[in-house]
Length: 282
Length: 279
Image (cartoon, rainbow over all chains, first blue to last red; front, top):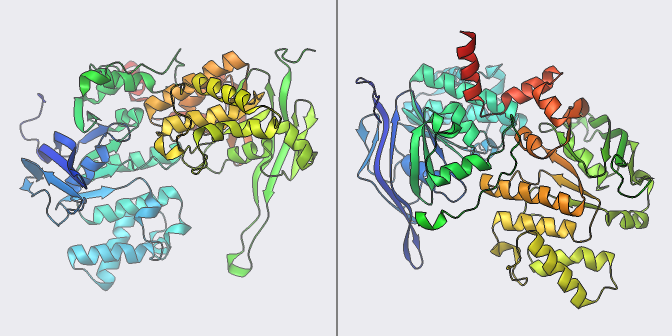
């Protein structure tokens, strides 16, 4: 990266992150030493297909991978200037994460208010009315109308878009410096997706947090990301600014992904590309 | 008129209505849902018609009605000149030979306890029970190589396959009895982009080679652009807009269609260019 302003601060810096899975036949490395840089207020799009290691990378940064099953090492894992040890039993301070399916992220037997105040109590030690007031502020922040009534709602009474807004509110309660969004809109309709993306962009501006946007959808990443890293088989094979997703790509894998993505604007003669570059990557 | 004359209507839906009745009592009572509310369309021989809409638009209900996986409340569905909404189970059996389906989830639409060879051969066993085993085997082999799985051992189980391979098996199963119409209900939505590309290309190759017609149910307008000749935009169970794919996507007439197209991701480059041009 060349044109970083001198006063820009990193929300997240990762150097040489490696993740191994402890299998019965010894450790298997699935993420092979990747570097991530996310500036405050900026978004890094982490793209790849299933099995590329993009979600594992997100979870490893968040500190969500169980230490019984995974071994994580990194030369550096720093959120907003604070160094964290990978493989620690605690979640990475300063980071928050949201997932693909908002319904499974929420507990069906708790109301939205219970869930939010729980997080607020744990994080900020607020109780009773103070916690409720903070919960209301958070629901307002994610543009949920009629927040006071929604506090008493259960997840199943809300639409998918509203559920994802609640999940984002919970993430905001942690006051993260970096938000890891793992396919947060994949389960949603396109019009709802557009609104959630808009919300994430606005929240980012308001709070200046960095974001790692993990997705298989190149078009979506080109819309939301400032910079892009393409993952394949546990490695970052290409990185650049968002223009990478609109034709500037050099790496054969990125080019293949781009050629395979249908566009709403033009019909392609053929979409599929042969995989003859596979050998050179291994 | 000959069997495969172009412009011959293969499937005609008229005024389809599907109402799910109210359920429950007291506080838990739900109102009746008009999932499909007066949908009509024609699908011609050799054509791909896409039905596009968001969740709850009724697109899958239309697909299930065409397949007669459930009955419509009112309206008619004419397939190959016969109104299939009134047919008995036995009469429907004969129709199903010409009317096949590929489902969204290649993990759930294949029986995990059946071997690939048996999965693909099953429609043949049902619709041509007198066929010799050796002959059936040969057709299965042919079909598997047609979908690009020629070297796949037929004694494999679905769990030994990748998602893309499973979807190919689903396509082989749908096509083995040479249907006239294939309903693809979100058939590529669960696949990785590179695999989706292969399956979309495969579907268009097979359409050319076998003279198929597709009813393509999808939420993805980019997929519509890629595969469909004509498109039907559904919203709240009603047809909002209908026309040739390029016409509808390039010059949408309705506000709803315009918003739907604008919400499709990947248009930042165009937006920024337009911003520059207007400044």
